[in-house]
Length: 332
Image 1 (tube, helix red, strand yellow):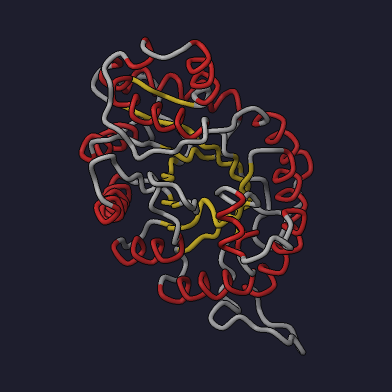
Image 2 (image 1 turned 60 degrees about the horizontal axis):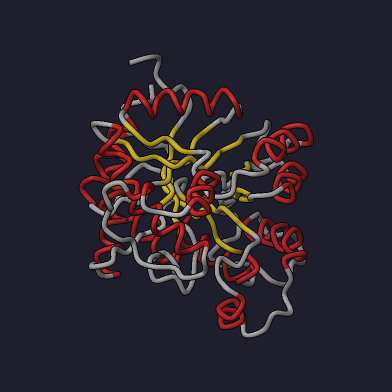
């Protein structure tokens, strides 16, 4: 095998619920995978906030983070991300401040400005839609202030939260998040694993405009990267077909639970569906270790990524753990 991957690898987990499984199984699988990720040397383990999706069980993100952190010892645990327009910044400061008090130095807070759901569910979460995604920059700053040391005369103090200085990341899939992360001097995670279109422009803009802050002295870019590694290319593409089915159903507005893999799946779908999958899988490594290592190296050279956030939805939990084990072996 060629030179090892030289940058850290991390894990993003959406707590996939299989078509014949239960939510309880999916949540226990998250904890099990996190324990394995820690043992395998992954840098951080994040879960994402999504709502009203049958195949994703990570909606109560802060609660799940607490369970993961309690079941592990050293790995950083965080959100990828909390969709801040769904919440009052004070509530998030109290939640993550509580987590930070239980698990000092291990909790991270990735923030996104999308709702992570449909408009009807967004209304159910907030009770009204007077909050706007355009408020996101102000909400981030407000949240930073709650997590920092209280100022003299500060009327509202997050308790827990104040003084914990939980590290904040900005998440995004467009130039907006890149500009905000750069202006605030925060690390930036781009959702290239499902929306790669503006990735290179966003990374360039972030690096060019970055202003050092108390949290970060130089730019740090983490990019989402889909992985599915098996003994052979053929087996990996077979295992990957579960995620492909789920992705297509989501893009057509009919989300499903993670289905079993289908042999030769991509030969059975329409040209338009193939094109959609091709766009979605631009930032992916699917195949044997040799194939995925080559693809990862190319991706790192193309983007200059400082870290990769590995994403993988595989129907068989044991096969998913094995895929992450094989992926971890690629890193030095």
